Length: 141
Image 1 (cartoon, rainbow, N blue to C red):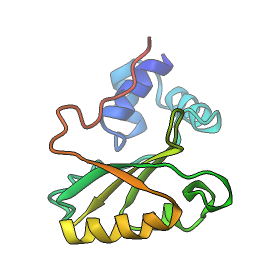
Image 2: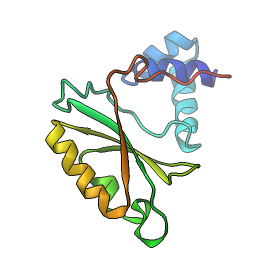
Image 3: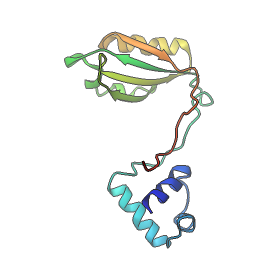
Image 4: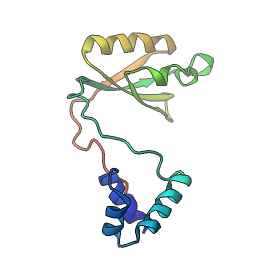
């Protein structure tokens, strides 16, 4: 039942409890209680709008691999996650310490992000040309 709720919420997080209850065949109070439990357990971490980056003025998207370790590592700087260009930061294994997804309005703005990141170590970027699968809902395994 939780997966049925998650499927519906991922498709449209704006559904009312009464509409959710109709779709999953539970009463509205039961749906509200299950959703509350999913939120409290940290399974549902928030409700978000999917934004088309290009239409929102962020034409250039890229993944940047950072090779920095120790006290000067980008992962230790609490300001970087708040840069408006930074969409995601992942700590990874291998010869790099992190992978950062950024979106900027232009190549010049992208260059400026690269220059700012260079203070933490050598950035290596990969431009995202298109995203055949930009997002998909989580399904049970």
